[in-house]
Image (cartoon, rainbow, N blue to C red; front, top):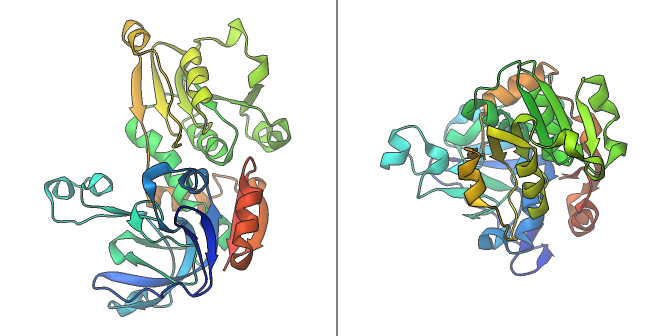
Length: 317
């Protein structure tokens, strides 16, 4: 089958082995797949993953032991947990020490004509939801994880550093409690729809003393080590710094001043799919402005070349 593979170099493979149906899993034919920054970082050495790339998808179940799932249009959580260890027993499957992660760690991803995922990871997509909306479920769930981890008050001032794909989704989700949200970015051409949502914007070059340390919560979504330094400058003493970016490069952070300023530092990763699907189904998160380009799976290498520095590039399978 056709697949986009990273094995030390990014390649298109026409005869990649088709996955076999495994107990407790489903075979899924993706219809639309998103390229995210983590996929790009894997090609730079992040996580050491070798295999099929991709973890953002919407697709149809074509084979499963549980016949109810066959023919269902689905999205899926990316962490395939063992569901038998002590971590899973306390309901924390996303941190299972035995987990594999779709297209990221020891599990082939979704940039192929067929892939496998445990049934426990699947979520049925509402019939009325277009594929172009459903494909955003995983990153929207990651944005909702911030609200799972942190009580954000309507009176809080919140900044999102980075106006890429994830940053624009996080800004939309974080506005839902009614708080003041500002996006710090470098791409004004992406901001028009944010104004319609009452989300403020500031160019990174325009940050001055008036912007330093006034924010209760700062979420770092830039995908670059420099973004963490910017985020740190924006958070007030006793405020909270949420780290969303995953990248291969190392970054420096003054740990002493985190202690002195009593900053809460929170790593934030995967989140609740059910909440993301409800928000998308209810029109609470705009996705259409985030799609920059569409390519066929067969043009996957060209799609990767086009994806760097752009909003969401999607692959049609």
